[in-house]
Image 1 (cartoon, rainbow, N blue to C red):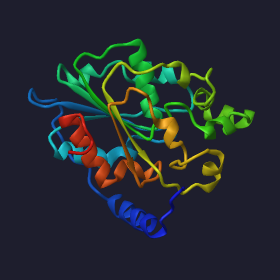
Image 2: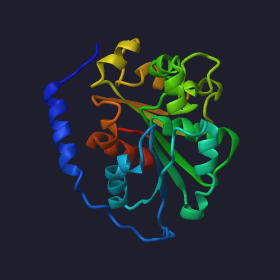
Image 3: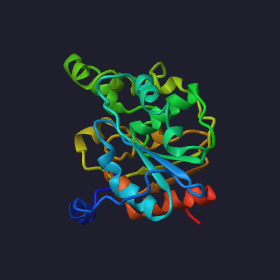
Length: 244
C-alpha cells in the first residue's frame, strides 16, 4: 500500500528549504594517507548539488569526498560511465574508494565495473537504483520527441529483459541498497505496479546478491537528505550493515 504522509512531506520540504543555504564544507585539496575516499554519483537530470548535504555529512565524519558531475541527456550509460569514472585515482590516490550513488548513478557504476576494475574498491551504497529498470522509462521511451530531448538513457532503463540495464548481470562487488516507499508523483506511481518511491518500484531496485537492504519512508529525490539514510551509509561503510 502506497503511503503518503502529508505532514511528513511538508516537514521534509521545509527542512530542505532551510538547508539550501548551508555552506559547502571545505576539505584538503589532496586526500590524506589515513583517509578513505567516497565518490558520489548523482541521478538523471540532476547535478552534484543534489548530494551536497550528504557530501558535507561524510566530510564531517572524516571521509575525503569526490562528487561526480555529468550531463545525462547526450550520451549513453556506458559512454557517461567511461567518460566520468575513469580517472578516480587522480583524486583518491591509493586509498580505499567507496561509492554512494543515487538512481541512475548506480547503473552508471554497475556499467563501469562490469567492464573495468577499480583498485582498492571499498563498499557501495545505492540509493533508489532502477536496477531492473523503471516503468516510467517504459512509458517515456514510447515518444520520439521525449527520447530526442532526454537522450538514449531513458530507453536503456526500460524494464524488458533486452534493455541495457537488464543486460548488466549481477554485480561482482559488495553493495547494499536503500529504497524509499513514499511518492509525491501519483502519475508516475500509477504506471508502476506495487509499492514505489515515485520513480522506481521497490522490487525493481533489488538485486539477488545485495549484502543488505533498507526500506525507508522517503521519496525518490528526498531520500538523499534523510538523516536515517546518512547514518545507514556510515554504518555500512564501517560494518557492512545498514543498522547496528
